[in-house]
Image 1 (cartoon, protein in one colour):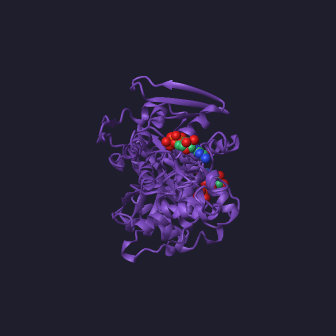
Image 2 (cartoon, helix red, strand yellow):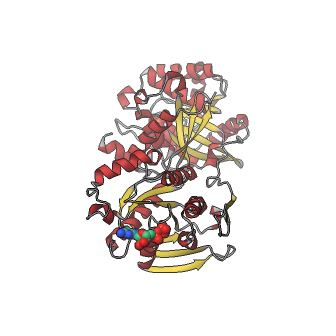
Image 3 (cartoon, helix red, strand yellow):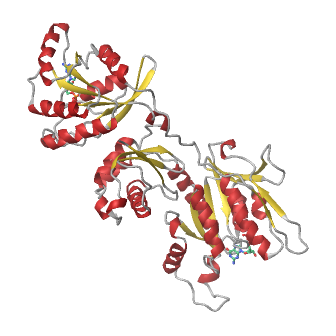
Length: 500
Ligand code: GDP
Ligand code: GDP
């Protein structure tokens, strides 16, 4: 990746919602300078595509929404990323047509009515007509009715529907839209992507050890019931790793408000810390402090509490005891965090115990080597930042705690990031899929992709076949996305939608 490319890619803007993806799609194509962008802008009322005669202009496929007589559709300008000198080569025309034919429900080909028919026009027309989708020819730059007769010359291209328009002045546009919308299908059902990932409610009882009361844990509330302008943080981990110590350190800084939430049981208490205008809600702090009486009981409880806390969180702090390293139970809890779609920060706590004179006689730990061990033990959490801290009041400083807040803020922001479809496809063009180590028969061809959802970032891939993505392929693509766009701390989810 070159710096400039990355910078351009990272200007991610909010564009399409899942709802808009279900709309029928109209593609606009034509060779450069015929007025596609001008038309696109007039139809969508937006200024997203670049209009002008600047030489060497490169453009992306650009999407927008359009509404006509109360019916909505999506519009794509298939302009493509085209250096001017390559714009006229047949392969580019072919690519444009492919995009239009694969994705669109109707196609509007634009020609410049003031110029002679050029061979790329004929090439494109031929390809579009072969595709068999409803196609309309808009003869542009017919700025006055006296010019309409000239439009008739373009019938030679073979289109049944030929409409003179002036994208600049707006004439003829209504007639064009009437015809195009008449052939559009009803908005597609499907692409049902929930606002937040589904969480299986549960109700579990942990067996009691001798002389103990059994403990029952069940889910109490759904994610959506919380205020959304705050970051909900779950502190999860095995018994004695330092969760309550960390919680104390976090809530003793600045302003902490203990707030029981209406409608929840009395022992579900959240604590809120406000910091530089950012609100952090530590969920169910009573639960974090709750201790089982026997070791076994406490361990089972810690796993179930983790699941419960994850349900209510955006970001989780997976606390590991530095002296003990990652255990099976840690990995188990980490697995729940990963699957929940919540963002994860791995907190190696009690770092003081392994770096200074160790009580267990082992040599002082090297942070880099230690980090590698944690990564190996928690492979699936490769996106989670690692923090080394000492939360204890004697050992940890305010600096360590500031570090935690800063990371939580960062991953909370990253998880809600949205990359525009235009940027995404620019990105897709650059991915070298040859490098993915995936068997040929397990590969899918991705025509285009779009980020349908944030928190966690969820990408819909429009592919040639409807097969489950191979694990390595998914990982490869996720890594490429991270390299370009970050999404620090958040899992990346994919959905496949086959086009045929
Ligand atoms: P694109 O490369 O196909 O997207 O074309 P543009 O939208 O960038 O337009 C190319 C040039 O044609 C620009 O200078 C526009 O101002 C001009 N243009 C576009 N539509 C019309 C029109 O309806 N009438 C006239 N006279 N000029 C137009
Ligand atoms: P929890 O069960 O996960 O909530 O763990 P606690 O917060 O109760 O901590 C368990 C024990 O570890 C307590 O004795 C703490 O004082 C101790 N502890 C927690 N954090 C640190 C730390 O950073 N360094 C050291 N040396 N001890 C710690």
